[in-house]
Length: 571
Image (cartoon, rainbow, N blue to C red; front, top):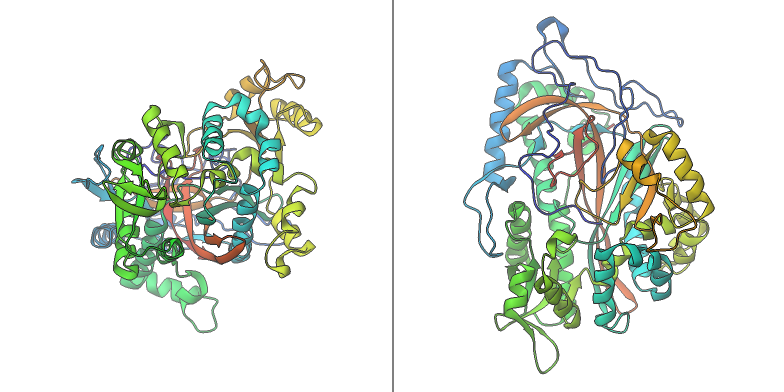
């Protein structure tokens, strides 16, 4: 499901407190440790490794020990003055192109922050395997269609979420909105989705493994696009970097960008998808309502989307919080159109509403129900949001479950065994905690070897998962015979295999501080999806996002304050 939309400028787990830091001093050599990917599962492994399929994994440069310099993975060693020039150029470019986050906020959705700084970024692109990137790109549209099919299968949702609804109040409240708005019968015939599937390279298997599929409030389409553009600018702006990257390119044209730093169209594709949903809604004079959080920090990522919607597609955007929608929205008497301040809004785009904190009172829940009861196209519908639950992800990894849905894909070429095989190859080990035999065995293994697992609740936004002793403490209460709602039942969680990615060395810039870190990365691939009735009119790859975090941090969310925005350097 979603990444948080609110950028934490000060990290809850400081990105700059790692013992692996190297700042023009002799680089500390710390033994590899198991560390998680948080909402993005993961663990660091030694830097010099070969995967089972023979792929040579990225390894961090040791830098130039003669002058106590460091080097980011895949990049040349830079002198102190070169790094300072790189930092200054990056900050300047970010300020000129909107690669920014706010440092203050307002409770009014339409208000604009008056103080801001550059987004947390890597100063150079990070090595990432080209074939892993290609696999993640290829399966993205399939997971978008899969999510929609799941959202339309009421019986499957009931079957899989029954235990969760008894044990997780937030998911139960979403389910109540779904039922009160008419369930499947109450849904708009148009489903609009800007989804993102997240992956990490797993060294033991040599495969990209899926961390999750985000169906609601996906973020960073604009800022990820800007990061790629910034990296292209920085590489060409520095003679040292331009010479280095040009010399190592594998592309027969000699163009480093074509070979290794793929263009990123996430911002353009997101706006095209929203515009397609607006067009399908059938009223070109109606507005799009962007639901945002009060005190939003990630406002530039959102406003870049809004600006491009107007400039390229002629779609006007209104920003509002759920509380404001409750106060100022109503349904028209002649057809349940969504009227906000007496203006019709035919599309609702959620950049909030993915976590319990977005619903501090009944007002926010009333607003969500009002939206679902309206004729407006939702991105996403509450049914699609429920389809992104962790429990659904776990269920789809079960025997023959994925195949049940793939057989119903609209495109005949994607209904066969090959599609199922490729999609299933990206599944990590996922276990239900509702008494199933596989879950019982996995719990016993996780208690004995906690470094191999992560315990995940039905939550999004980072900072929610349990690791190590915290996880073991919860798992020791597990009673496989307990029914949902009874003591010892852990249906609100799933147990997931931890992914073991390789590490790199990254030159990070956050809140003005520049530092080298041992890091691991997670790739997200966006998808733009529009269905009208039974016909899919848009299902496209929508660009990509690379988030890079300190290898000593369990969590991985940029918005939660755990990571930096990055670009993949394919190799």
